[in-house]
Image 1 (tube, rainbow, N blue to C red):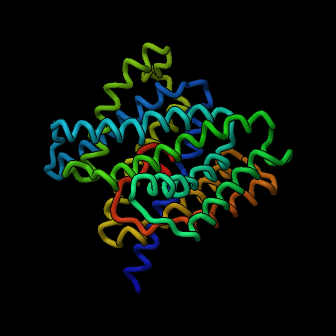
Image 2: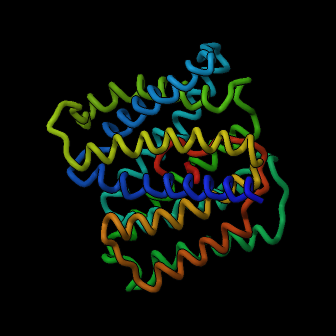
Amino acid sequence: MRERLRLTAILVAMGAGWGLCVPLGKLAVSTGHQPFGLIFWDLVIVAVFLGAVCALRGRRLPLSRSALFVYAVVAALGTAIPGWAYYASAVHLPAGVLSILMSTVPMFAFPVALLLGNDTFRPVRLLGLMCGLGGIILLVGPEASLPERAMAAFIPVALIAPFCYAAENNFVARWGTAGLDAFQVVAGAAVLGSIVMLPVAVLTGQWVDPRPPYGVAEGALVLSALTHAMVYSVYVWLVGRAGAVFTAQTSYLVTGFGVIWSMALLSESYSGFIWAALALMLAGLFLVQPRPSIRLVPTVAVDEAGR
């Protein structure tokens, strides 16, 4: 009983940490920093942190063709594309709404899994998809849902991120990680991704100057990247200690804590329609949540789930 309570406390702390990354991402774009520059530095920080973890564990980063392919897929689907979608939509959408939308990772994962043959059809999970769709309609449709009607145009952009996380998870479930452990995969993806994103950030004029003075946006970026790297490490440990089914419950906590942190740090308030959307999303998440084997989670502020 004492061990279960300890593991539950760790699970809650992990969900709180991941949920914190959502408003931190909102703060990171608050002073005009552009997505590609933020993604580059996020990757650098994760690469340094998890690279050090791999070194301490005596695990190098293989550079075989299969390993590089895994790094490339995870970097693209777990960081670059969803990172752009998240930061681009975070400029316009409340962080609480972004937290709610991140709960759609399992809802996207289910139809993708069906297409790839990773899962079988179950009516109850179709009902979960309908709940998720209902939640999105509540966010986009009613006049009183979002603070400004123009924000609704960025809901589809924000949904690119959970779709990518769902595709990443299914890629790993279907084709594996070429014998690499989770730390190696994410560290390798961060290294490769940072190499690719450096010229992209510079050539697009989205470079973020790392020199002082530092403000809230820069501090939020560093804290978000470090928090994610640490929480991801705990996630991997907890899967091995308590199992994937127990650890998967973090999906609910990330969404809930994302909303709470957004209210506390950004003074956001939400209409009744948004709270109803949250309830529908959580109900859909409960119905569609798979009973997964050990797999990767999103590598950007929000992963997975959904990332």
